[in-house]
Length: 129
Image 1 (cartoon, one colour):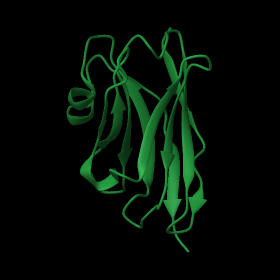
Image 2 (tube, one colour):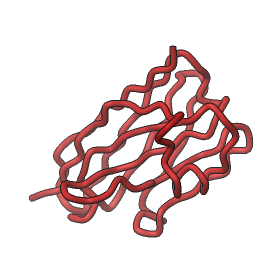
Image 3 (cartoon, helix red, strand yellow):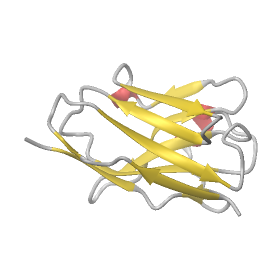
Image 4 (cartoon, one colour):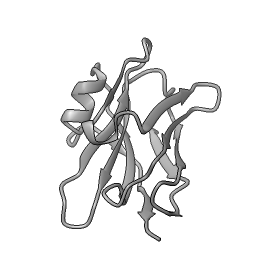
């Protein structure tokens, strides 16, 4: 059974850093593209950073390029999102998700899987003084 679980969400000051982690069970994080998404109150869920399986191609939404880094750790079955220089626009519930089919990182981030996707329950990231 495929399960994803996010952790690491916290309250961070603007300009601070935080790493959130997605732990996978029931499949290898190297089998499919996997991504991080976020949803702020009243806003649509958006793709933040995604990574493909074998070649590790990555895609980032423009708002986080140069600040966020997605990385897989196959040995730990985790996908981490390192977030630096956090801004007031970054808060939200951060989810990781994957789908059991071939997707490029850009495809996954642009069109979050709904019908066949596997999602975690999310972890809250708050950016405030």
